[in-house]
Length: 195
Image 1 (cartoon, helix red, strand yellow):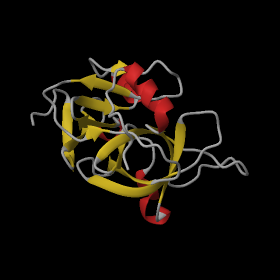
Image 2: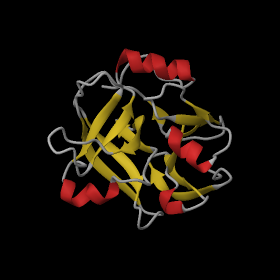
Image 3: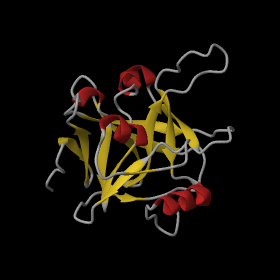
């Protein structure tokens, strides 16, 4: 695949490429991923880097953006209809932007009135350093599909209000409600959830 102009190739995750935008600093530019039919990332990555030709989601809590391009291949988008499943985060190392890191984690149940779900990395001591500012837009993977992106807003504990290591909030395509929102936004998702 030819890498879109302005992007730096970091590595592959299945049929998708993990990219960083070249301006102004690779280590803080956020992550963009190819999917079957375009590029996907977080809205604040697009706005912060002035990335051209992206559609940004107008719903404030859904920090997501995409750019359609039928010539781009990659993993298909998918959705789930289940709480508390294990998924994988694909991102790049902040210290080595060309190194792709895959982190197994848990998409937790949230009781808050929001479509952002907490993502908790397993083996936090090992992966804590990878979930921090600079990895926004990294894709969440399940059953060889992209099922969401990580805006990398670290969630806080209710007791001390300190940052919780290895934890972030993710826009997850979970449930008919989110499927409908994503389709209204212009993304195409399959009729049935992944199993």
